[in-house]
Amino acid sequence: MYAQLVKTDSDRVRGLDEMSAEERAFQERIDRGEKIEPKEWMPEGYRKTLIRQIGQHAHSEIVGQLPEGNWITRAPTLERKAILLAKVQDEAGHGLYLYCAAETLGVSRDELIELLHAGKMKYSSIFNYPTLTWADIGAVGWLVDGAAIMNQVPLQRTSFGPYSRAMIRICKEESFHQRQGYDIMMKMAKGSPAQKAMAQDALNRFWYPALMMFGPSDKDSVHSAQSMAWKIKINTNDELRQKFVDQTVPQAHYLGLTVPDPDLKWNEEKGGYDFSEPDWSEFFDVIAGNGPCNTERLNARVKAWEDGRWFREALVAHADKRAAARIAAE
Amino acid sequence: MATAATPSVNDALVEFLLRTGDNTLILGHRISEWCGHSPVLEEDIALANSALDLIGQTQLWLGLAGEIEGKGRTADNLAYLRDAAEFRNALLVERPNGDFGFTLMRQFLFDAWHFELLTALTQSKDPRIAEIAAKSLKEVSYHIERSADLIVRLGDGTAESHKRMQDALDQLWSYTGELFIGDAYDDVLAEAGIAPHPASLKDKWLAVVSRTLSEATLKIPSSTFMHKGGKRGIHTEHLGFILAEMQFLQRAYPGATW
Ligand SMILES: [Fe+2]
Ligand SMILES: [Fe+2]
Image 1 (tube, rainbow over the protein chains, first blue to last red):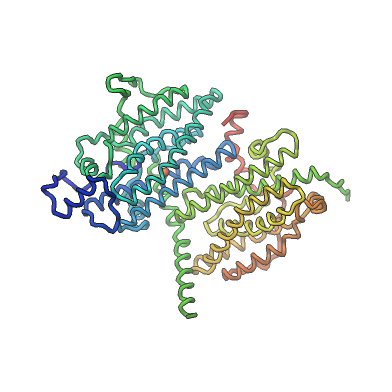
Image 2 (tube, chains in turn cyan, brown; image 1 turned 45 degrees about the vertical axis):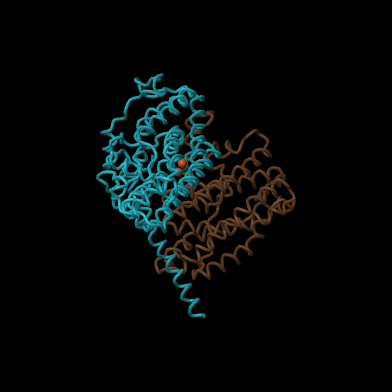
C-alpha cells in the first residue's frame, strides 16, 4: 500500500454519544455509506488525516517513477520499452489525480511537494529499494502494483468523494501494470537459465519489501481504528497482507519460482497461507531514511524541482505578460 | 573523382527508412531519460507521451526497413544489434539533453522538420510509407504544437529563461543543416516520388521556425556553419554511449526472449 503509518491525531475512537451534533451527523452519513464532498462540513481530524494519506499516496506515485524509469533506456525490446514508458507515464498521471484530490481539501500541490522535499512527508517504503536487473521491472509490476491494488480496490469505496473517484480511475490502470509485470516474469522464468535466475533473484529481493508495503500489524492501533470508522481505511494491514500472500503464492508457483520463505505453508483451517513476517526493524530503518535508495530518491526529486524552478517561473512570467497585454489592449 | 553508381530504389528505401526510424529511436531514447526528472508533473507526462509516440513510430519505420531489406531482420534486431557506424540518425537527435530548455529547443527544431517531412510523405507513391506517415503525422502535429508553444513561453518568459533558450538555440543551430542535405539515395527516392528531397523541406521549415523564434524574442545565430555526418554513419561520441545503454541486455544475453 502506498500510504503507511498514517496518523489521525486521535487518542481513541469516540462513540456517537460523545460527539457534537455536527460530528454525529457526519459520522452517521459515513455509516450510511454516503460520500463526503469537499465543500461539506468535516471534522478537522478527518481533513488532516486525508491530506496525509492522499499526499503520501501521491508522493509514492511520483517517487515510484524513479526505480522503473531506471530501466526505460535499457528495456530489452522496443515493445517492452513502450510498455514501460506507458506505465511510468500512468504513474505520473496517478500522482496528478491524487494531488488534485488533496487540493480539494485546501492544500496545494506545491505545498505538499515542499513537505516531501523537507522530509516532513513520506512515500511508500518500497520505492527505496533498487531495481538492479530487468527482472526487477517484472517483479515491481507483479508484486508492487499487485500490493497496491490490494489496498486500492477497497479504497474505491472510501468515504471521501474525490479520493474514491481517483481510486476508481487508478485501479483500472494498476491491474494492467500488474499483468504486464507478470508477463515479464513469465518470459524470464520460462527463458534461459540466466533469465530464470534473474527472475528468482528479483522475487527473493522484493518479496519481503512487498509484504512491508501493507505496514506493520495495526489491529491494536487507534489511528487505524479511527481511519476505519471514517472509512478512509477499509481493511486492517494484516487482512490485506494475508490476501496478497494468498493471491501471489500460486502465481509464483505457476512461474516455477520459489517464495523465499521456508515456513510458508497452506493452512487448511484458515483457508490461507501461513507465512513469515518481514523483518520489521528493516522496515523502520527504511522509513527512518536508511533504506538502500532513500537518499538517491529524495535527492533526485529535489534536484528535478530545483533545476526546474526557472522553467516554472518563466511560464508564470509569460502568463503575466500576456494578461497585462490583454488588459492594456482593452 | 570516382562517381558512385546510382543506388537501386530498394537500397535507397532501406537507407531512408533507417534514417527515419533511427531519428525517432534516438530522440525517443533521449527524451525518455527525463522520466521522473522533469520540472513539473505535467512535463513528465507529456515527455513520456512523446517518447512513446516516437518509439511506436520507430517500430513501424524499422519494421518496414527490415521487411524491404529482406534479410529477416526485425525492428528489434535493427535497433539492438547494429553498432554506431550503422546508425543513420541526424546528429541533432543524439545531442545530450542539457537543461530542460535545451531539450525543448532540440525537440522544437526537430518537430518542425519532422512535421514537414511527414506531411510530404503522406503523398508518397509507396503506400506503406504514406500510411505510416499519416499515422505519425497525427502524433507529430501535437508534438510541434506543444514544443512551439513552450519555446514562445520560455523565450518570452523571464530574463533567465530567455538566456537559457537563446543559449540552447545558439548551440543547436549548427546541427539543423544536416536535415536538409540530400545524397544519391535521396535523389533516387525524390525522382521516384517516394520521399521528398531533403532540400525541398527547408523553406517551409525555416518559415515556421523563424516565426516561432521571433515570437519567442529569440535570434537565429548568424553563423552558417553546419555539422554533418549522422546520415552517413559518422556520429558524435555520444551515440556510442546511447547504444551501450540501450543495447545492453540484447548484447549481454544474445538470443534471449524478453
Ligand atoms: Fe500508480
Ligand atoms: Fe502502477
